[in-house]
Length: 223
Image (cartoon, rainbow, N blue to C red; front, side, top):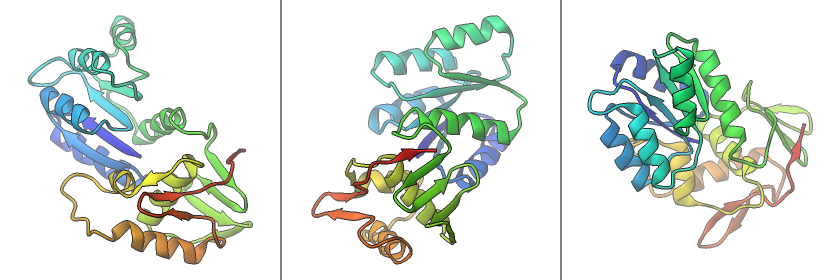
């Protein structure tokens, strides 16, 4: 899941990026509203975390322009403006959630997981398909009830495929969910992770659509 963080406080941004990456998100960060709009128009993120007090323009204007341009994915406003009128204004401008500063990272992660569930087929923190189950809160993966050890990238890749069950995921789309801007990615990175995952999962769980990408063709269940 790709997150665009728009935050001009460098120390806060570093802490948020670190926490989100640890939690299994792919995170890109910009400090200006104009850069955020350029990023959204080029490659829309799955989730937008938007500060309002930006140095070049107000975050609410960024949000309004993004919505008018057709960006429909969830937006979480992150700001020190915590009065009720400010919250109402942000929600009316198109935000899906509002978190006032200062905040706990755990609450931010919980709110993002809730917004993330709106994007996929899964409406709970558990994704269960056949014998494979992911707990997105604890990041635990089990196969037929037995715990499976996975790297962070393997977990992110499996989660991306399972939460979009029955939809083909292209290699480029999967790359964007696994890596942030500037990270060096080799041409066969996704293939390597798929190869490693297949060793740990039931045969045929992840299928290749030749020339396109990969798919989990099972109907996901909500727990």
